[in-house]
Each structure stands twice: as C-alpha cells, then as structure tokens.
Length: 233
Image (cartoon, rainbow, N blue to C red; front, top):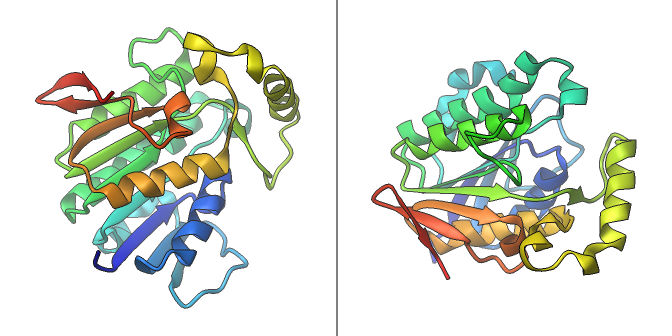
C-alpha cells in the first residue's frame, strides 16, 4: 500500500486526540496536517499544524488535497450557548470541509455525527446531525463515512460533569443494554478513532454509515448504493 496523507479537523477533541496519535504512529501515513485554533503541544516529523479560523476554511482549501480528511468537529448546546453557534460548529464547518474535500478530490471523507442523527427528528440536536449527513452525502466524494457514536468515554480537556456522571452510569449498566438497546452503550473515543482509520484504509467507495454498536467491530451497518440504503451484513 502506498504512502498516504491526511488532514484532521478537531484534533484537540476527545476522538481527534486519539486519531492523531494513531495517524502519527502508523507507517502508512507520511504526512498529517491538523487545523487547530491553538497549537497543540505535540511535535512530530510527519505533523504540520495550522492555526486557523474555522469560519475561513476556504482560505486553506489547498490543504484538502490529501488522501483522507477526518472531521472530528463538534460541540454541545451548553458550550455553544445558542442554536446559531451550535449550527455553525456542527453543521456549517463540517459541510464546508466536505465541499473543500470534494473540490480537491480526496479519497475518503470521514466525519463524526451522533447516535440518532435524523433529518426528520423532532429534536434539534439530532435533526442538525441528520441534516449535515444528508447534505454531505449529496456531494461527489469518492468515499464518505458517517460515524454515529453513543456517549463517548475518554479524558477530556474540559470537565463535563453531567457527561461524566452519565458515562459512569451507562458504563455500569452496559450489560443490561442488549439487542436493539446495545447501540446506547457508551463507547471509548479510542475505538471510534480506530474504526475511522480502519475505514479510510479500506478505501471502499460510496456513502457509509457506522452505528455505535458496529464501531466496536469496525463494521459498517449500512451503505448507500444508487441512493438506496443497503445492509452491509
């Protein structure tokens, strides 16, 4: 397999941190660029860090001329404070990144949405996640992957008390979450990152959706063929 290049958006986040470590340690990648608001305390011969304003992604569109674009951007309503700011981070930025990836013909665009993402959802959060999936899927990208994890486990830079309590509670009760409820089990950020890189290296064409319960195994729950959803199992 030939050497690869990657661009990571959201490398300071829970999944992004894990993903960056994997990419830098993987011999198949010889060049990794990250977009950050503030430079990360990491140095590596493969790594190039660019401090940017994500509202001006277009100014750095040439950086999307890579094999794989990993989009790990995301926030919470509590942190965003307003619906408009939430939409900017979880919808506008990922969509703009996908359009840049389309323009520069990257092989794989991989992004994190959320469990329950659904354009027709009555819930604002899930509806926004569903909308970004819908709009990115309509672009002409060789391979697009959406990852829908449940509650993420890992060491965050900032304290999210209620997420920590919720994670502990769900983790303790995970053995009860079986069958159709299995997808609600909390998942380690490491496993999401590992599944993302695995999907990129497989180089499968089309649009692929990875539900939380399948991220553990690295399998894809379903893909789209000619606009129709097809079970992958």
